Image 1: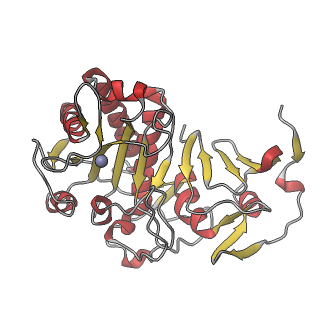
Image 2: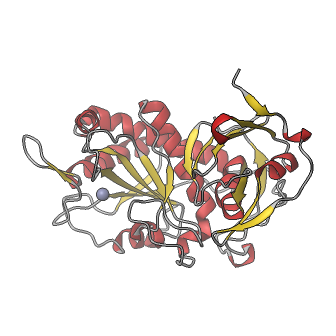
Image 3: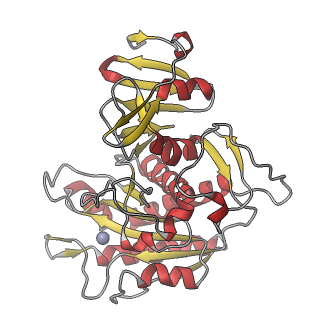
Length: 353
Ligand SMILES: [Zn+2]
């Protein structure tokens, strides 16, 4: 067993610890854990582990990298010394993933797939025997995914079905017009530096209001709410389930659930994510990306993620819909009464693994 410097949080004094760090409100992770029936272990190298019967959460001091039930999730702000976590991360990352919400009795019917780039927009270009253009791999992945989803009875629409240029704002607009239940944008990545080393999928969902994005460009923290923020908990759960499925089923490196205000995500009115399915700049991973059989497996992993999301977030029609909140924590992102997409909610502790 690992060396444990301090043991269970229940032995710690019940002190309320709140602070402002770099303009962010921080609260005590150990206090939150105790209120929500987690055991806390503070390990060597400032690792903080919260466990209960169904969940295991791992945090690192001075790091925004968290592991929630085995899946890497990039927080908006780093954990601060003294086991402090930003209130925003509790509200917009930890709580939605640990205390799962059942949103709606409505099943997913229509899924909009968005093959990245196209036409004059090649996307990433990587040299090989010939130039590999990202747009030529996102489309066949989308077509494969469409076939697999249609076989399960889903209605699938595409933002493009050939090598044509589609403006970024048009892509979520197509999904909105069709009343799609999910929007999934498909891309492949390229590393600017240390090209050969970086590999693995990343799945993005909309950045919470008041936080900077975790994509490489960033955007600062001064962005207000977008239409996508109205369903940000759902988008986070969809991103989580798909990232988990990709990492576990394809046995690839898990490069996190991340946040970005990508143009295609900002204006989507339904749960929306963007998958970077791996790095074309990695010699091993690029061979897989260029291989139809591998893309078939990737599509199957995405389908599994969608099905898990549906199973975990959709009420059976006969279920009662009480509204409870075991955390007692207010979601400050947007008031629920202004959320035209919200529906009666029930939160249930569920093992996400
Ligand atoms: Zn791309």
